[in-house]
Each structure stands twice: as structure tokens, then as C-alpha cells.
Length: 233
Image 1 (cartoon, helix red, strand yellow):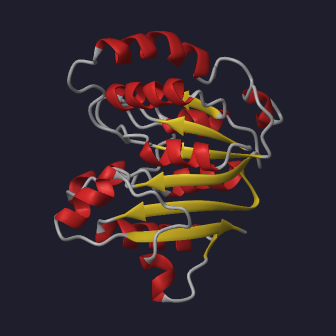
Image 2: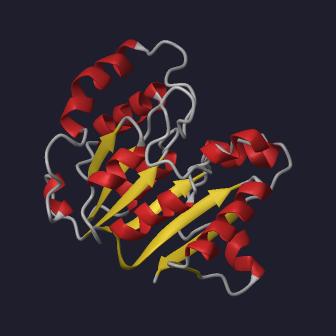
């Protein structure tokens, strides 16, 4: 964990590489045309009412940090057409994949950002987000890299500021040390209640959970997952 306001992009970024294999032609076209249209403009002030970010009427707004392959974000956007979703993902190939699906499904309730999620968190108004999803984030398994984990006192402070009263922070991981890390840091922060009452509450996937490729990989490798729900207090 780090207490730095902004980790150095070269050595302390919360994410690793930015690009993988070359994009297919359609993905490259989508990235060139759709990303500028859907990307948050952090150079301008955020609207006091985040519903203004979307061309359709939405009742609440959720933030997903590091959406990976985009399976979960797309599923939720289809499931809740009256909810606005902001997805953050710095990995170019993942962003291209998501944008292809957004175009294919003609989804109107998704906005995106392709860089550091802390920039979005610092841009958002106080008490403006209903829910934050951090699902299978990079666990940075080596102890010397733990300071690069996204869950930190600084970032929990960011979460607490932007969440509405009673807003929720959902976390999923198959890495025991990161699950314990998150529980400890949320307890130390003091602004979040863990809502679990019994073991099944954190061993059972979230309601409407579609599964992700990271989860499937974990199961193939014999690891179970934990699903933690915290509420802002």
C-alpha cells in the first residue's frame, strides 16, 4: 500500500502493462471512434449531477475499477438499463474489447476512462456514486509490491468521499492475502461496515453475478473466491 496521492507512473502505478497483442482492425476502429465519444473529460469540471454524463435517463451511477474483459460491466449495463456505469481500464486491449461490445449492443448507459482510476475518483463530486466495484484487481502477490495494491487508506478515503450515504463498495478476489488485506484496511479506515453475517455471505457471488474469466481461471487452478460487500457509514 502507498500513502502517496499519486503513485509514480513508472514505478508505482496500480496497474502493470498497458497493451498486449495487436488489435484487430474492428477493435482499432472502435478505439479510435468510440473511445473519444465515451471517455470522461477530466479537463472539465464534473457535473454536480452525474446523470448528465449519459444520453439516457439513469437513476443511479456505479463505478467499476479495472473492468478487465468487460464481461461484468456489460452484463450489469444490460441488466440495469436505468443505471449509469462508469468503467475504468488502462489496458488498451480490454478497452477495445469492451467498446466493441458497447457498439454491438448499442448500450447508452456506459462511460469510460482509460487511465488511472484515482484520477476519476479525484474528479468525481462528493457523494455522487451509488456503488463501486473492484473485482479481481491485480493482487501484486509479491510482498515487496503490496504497496501497489489498489486498496489503501488513501484510496478508501477516495471511495468514502465519492460514495453516497449508504453507498456500497464491492470487492472480489481469489487471493487470500488480498481478501484479508482489504478486510483489515476497511476496518482500520472506519468508514465502511462489512455487511457479512455468516460465511455464506462472502463465499456466495453477488446477486446477478455473471462470472468473469479471472474467476474461471481461479477455479481451474483450484482457488475459491471471496465476495465482500461494504457499506459507507
